[in-house]
Length: 103
Image 1: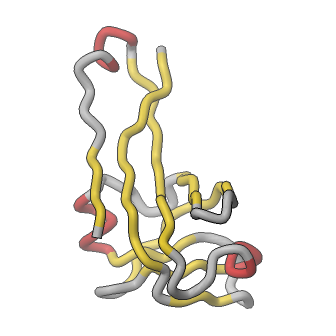
Image 2: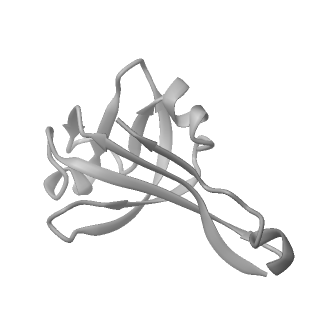
Image 3: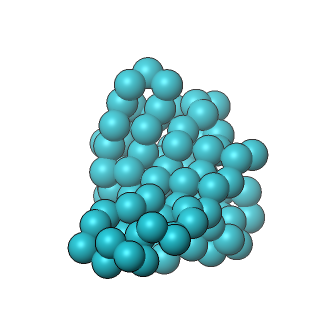
């Protein structure tokens, strides 16, 4: 088994909620378009070098909201990369194609 990139989206943070417990809320249609499953673990990277791990919640149209303590590191207007990985057998990984989305 090998861990490979499943999905990557580059998007702009539309809001934040420090008082909400963890997670990233993403427009449900967009999340499903790139293959993110609700409650799936994802990694968030931003140009400032912050690298964080959280989970996806489905939101309403246009949502890319950072929740909880991560909202201190990823602010409204920041461009972020959200990545998900999967484990595949080596032969399957060689032909696997990641879903890439950039707004």
